[in-house]
Length: 273
Image (cartoon, rainbow, N blue to C red):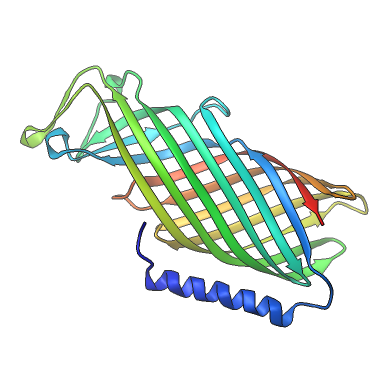
């Protein structure tokens, strides 16, 4: 796990102040809680960089995806929750995803490109957790909709494996030789501070609404951002939501995940109590 940076410690302190603010400034009234189990079916796109012994070329860059929804998804666990009092809320979101045999392409070995026609069926595997913890404050609450300001932290822990399969070995300057087939692994742990907005737009006087969420952040990553939008229907016990969700990470050119994204539909049921 990476050691906390000064910037990250400041983010933790800011989140703590928000939580203290909730206790000090919440409007009169009891706590309200919600729990949302949901299913998200993302597609994976991006570039993985895995380290190799110098004799094999030092590093391997592999482009993962796109793949069809559900084609390689082999494990999921998704749960979100919120505690609210007045305009303040504390929320969390936990995601576990596992992908097997994602269609991939070897793009380069070391600093040199690899002819795409040599690739005979490279695959990659991804398994990891994403956990978001944040606090929000309602800025707008009208019959037409709501708008909350959001601040918090997002944690990412991913293990990746690449099984490359080429039509021939690849010779690199200095005597390095990448065999025609092989396996390499990599892992990354990220802590990022995030800020954003969330809320919903109500459709007339009925039970339909349009939920939305947007955040952006940095820390261990050069950039991370997340967005979702969709439609919801309210019941006496809570609501059903169908949204499209996009989560993106860019760790930089020399890190494990570059221009990486998870995008796809999500269906969830929110229970309020």
